[in-house]
Structures are given as C-alpha cells and as structure tokens.
Length: 445
Image 1 (cartoon, rainbow, N blue to C red):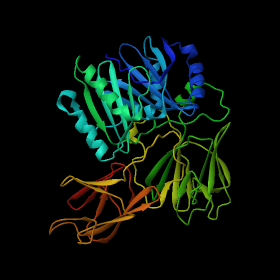
Image 2 (image 1 turned 30 degrees about the horizontal axis):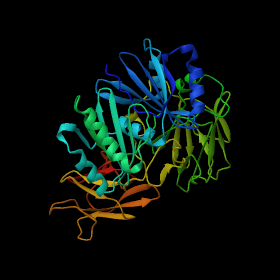
Image 3 (image 1 turned 90 degrees about the vertical axis):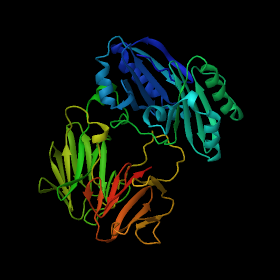
Image 4 (image 1 turned 120 degrees about the vertical axis):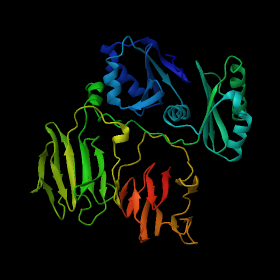
C-alpha cells in the first residue's frame, strides 16, 4: 500500500508503535489539545491507513483507505477495527483551521475535475477560479506528495505541501503552488483535482464527551446511544440519535427536536439519561404525554417504547449490532415545519458558499436559488419553466425559511414525487430527487 502523507503544520507525536494500554490516555491528551487547535491522528501499517480528525475536544470524522481510495467510517467502527490492526503505528499532526478543512474536503468530497497534470493548463484553471471569484480547492497528488492550494472568493490564501515551511505571502501563494508542482512533475505526472463543493460533514456518531467524563473514551464511543424515531400516522418522519444527557421536545425552536404543530406544547417533554437508564418527564404540557397508550408525568424508558404527543409518535430504540452506514441514516421523509432545533454543529468548518441550486436532469441546466421564493410551472412568469405541450400540469414553489428550503405544490393535477414518494410539501435535503411528470430535478447545496 502506498501511504498518503498529508500536509501538516507540526508533528505533535512522532511515528511510534501504538500501545493499546496507553491509547485511552493518548486520546484524552490529544482531545484536550484539540480545544486549542485542530489535530489529525494517523494510524497505519503496511496494509491500511486511518486518519482521525479531532477538534474542540472530540473526534470529528474518521476515514480509512481502501481499494478505491479513502472512505468515511463511524467512530465506533474505527475504534473496533483498530483492535484487529496488526502492529499499527501512530502519528499526530497539528494543522491550521484552513488546512484542516481543506484535508476534509480532499478526503470527503467528489471533485469537479480529475485530470493528469500533462493534460491541463494549471495557469488557465487558476485564472478561471480567480476571474469567477470562486471558493475552491486545487490539489496535486503523486505518490509521496500532496500539494494543496486554497482559494477564497477568487483569492489564493494558502498553499500546503509536504512538511511545513515558511508560509508564502498572499501574493506568492499561487506561484508557490505552481513552482512546487512543475518542479516535482519532472519525476512523474501529478493527478490534478478541482473541488468547488466545500461543505464538509462529521461522522454519523460524532458526539462530545459529557462534562466531567472520566471513563474510557474508547468505550464511550463503542457504546451506542438510543435513537428516537418520530412518526406520524405510523409513517417515519426523521431519526434522532440521543447524543447528550438531556433532550427536549416541543414546538419552540429552542428545543432539541422541534415539532411545529399546535397539538404539541412549547416545551412538551424532556428525555434524560440517569444512572439507571433513560427517563421521560412531561413538562406540564397542555395535551399530555402518553407512554404505550397510557398517560404519564414521568416514567422509565425501555427499548421499543412508544411516546405519543398530540398526533405524533416517538419510538425509543436502544441500538445494538453493527453501526448503520451513513447512507442509511436519516433518509426519511420530513413533513413541513418539522425540523431539528439543534444549534449548528460547532465542529463543522464552513466557508461562504454559493446558494443552493436545482439541477435539471433533462437538459443538464442548473438553477441557482437566489430568491426567497422560486416558482416552477408551465407559465411564462415561472422562474423555472416546465416545458412541452404535454408537460406536467402543476405549479410548485421553493421557499427559503431561514437555512431551510421548502418545496410545495400549490396547484395542478400532476403529482409531486420526492425520492419516490408522493407528497405536497417537504423541507429539501442534499440530493433529494424531485419528480413531476417526466421532469426530474436534484436539490444541491
């Protein structure tokens, strides 16, 4: 296996054999350091390679190298797999926030362009980024070398490659990247990639350690918190994993789970972890809380219990067995005005992005959602016109509500299908497939 050497700012732990007896202590030490600056932990042997990203005192994301490159895995799977890794070595790197984010983009995202350095004019490529004032990442890879140049709003702000050196001034960032690539390409060509989607994600089971936690960090992540499945008329709406000691449910946006329906009180109930398990507590709600059909004020929860508030059921599920894949999580229908009221994840590193857009499959058009409301219809006044004499007869709107975009059918006979299900309204999520008649659109952020 050809080991990927990532750029870094400083080595905090030189390559050393991993001692399992000391691993929890190492995690605790570097978790503490990650509250000051981002860290990347590399664990590898001759057959495999892991990168674990840390920030703000927790594991943020983990990736493992496979036959087809790197792929993200859960923290739980990472820690379980390490026990089976023979003679692993460990290194810990300190990075800047920009480099940390750039590495996440490189390892997580699909590139817009992938080409041999002999077949692309790098000057022309970078001119295009600067003229369009794009935020982008350009990477050059050959075995043993990964060079990254980061653009923000059309300006090259950082260049990283190999071991740390004196950072180039802003005016020389582009030249520094080009000189490195052209010099080293005399040995062998580089694989050049361009990334313009810079939104990164965390591991599905990333969660902070409880305040004052003193137990085994490995066991904390290897254990699995319960899941809450919210349903309406026995139809699953969304899954939530209980990653904190207490979770509130109610109508106000300050709750952890927000259900914007008049049958639900402003702060309806709380589910809390205790020394004996999990308990629910009704918060003097107007319509009451029911557990398995019986009214309760406070009660212990067991696997499979059904909590009813208003028209909604919440199934409490203890999680056992293998960790679910990212693609199987939270891929359920979301009804209007139903959303998570959780604060933005403090670990997500985000930079200003272009607005979300709708990609039209029939003619490969991309429509940017820049307005507060966009009309999709056959009418001439429509922002996105449904074409053809026999085109679908329906009118839709996509409306911005805070950070959410809601699609709604407002008229017509043609059905609106999203991800294969017929509905009249939905909060759009990344890669949602919107079908109306023969027309298909994909929602992208």
